[in-house]
Length: 81
Image 1 (tube, rainbow, N blue to C red):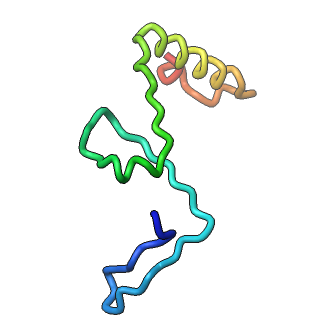
Image 2: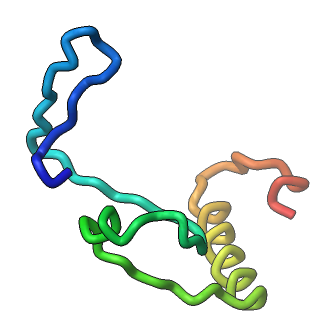
């Protein structure tokens, strides 16, 4: 990432592959297995885990909107439940 590309080690020539107009996005759980040298290429953002009541409210709201936005009943009642 520092040099805008990688060497292709899967080929006998091991040619250099330059990356052009590439953006990297990554996610990870709580771990210390990624080196700081690699992490420096990313903006590290921590999000506090949501409480179960908050998650229930968020997903209930989104799913209610989804089910209400369909003009005809696209989902059976057991799925809506």
